[in-house]
Length: 294
Image 1 (cartoon, rainbow, N blue to C red):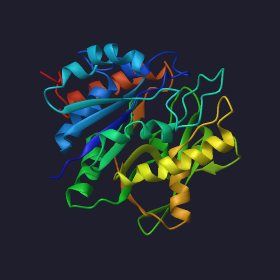
Image 2: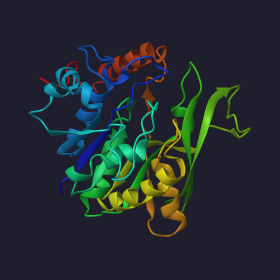
Image 3: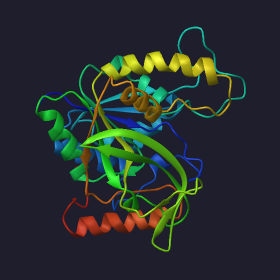
Image 4: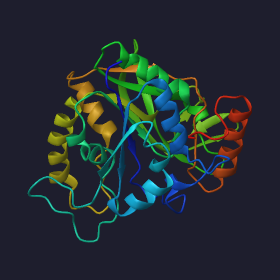
């Protein structure tokens, strides 16, 4: 298999969760959700992982996360800082919110020359998800791709969530629409945009596959973003918005890869006991060992 890198977005503090949720333990031997993602990625054939973090958390991150598996997969770091902007642009005074997923990915530009897969640090995707996208790139394909999940498998029991609703045609993505405040009530899923869904719809959980050409697009688009919204304190340069533009302009096609894995994550503190029980259930079914890295 050709080189394949996992790019893990882990720079967010998790405001709704109330702390650095990427370091929360959910496994029987203090494993984090990240640990399970790395375990699955290694078994699926990935040979490098890059973590996008804030520089101030590097020592803690190494101590609690990467030291466990640094001898099993190549580990590198990229740092998402508010001041890391193109020449001529400055972070406005008072801004504390990260610049968004598009900016996060750009921070890893100098570390990547091969196909790579982007994921969130605090989402559990399951082995099948890593295997289906690794298989896609193992055949020599270098097109863009997206692993989608059923909406009703991605909701929290303890509050609303935001999800990227995907429109698909003949196996290719035609658009991603971000819907906020999604909650399931009485077997229907509704949003604050008065959109009613049945839960079977495909959604993006930010498990994307790319080649380094993406950086050319991001480098170009972040300039227009900063010109328009760079002085706003909460504006975000979001990956799906760039992807939608690439689709509409016919510059790229995005292959849809479906996963039947049960997604789960820690959006709210109340989610943690559920995640812990799900991990126990998977261990009891021998999907994972009791201790991931020995």
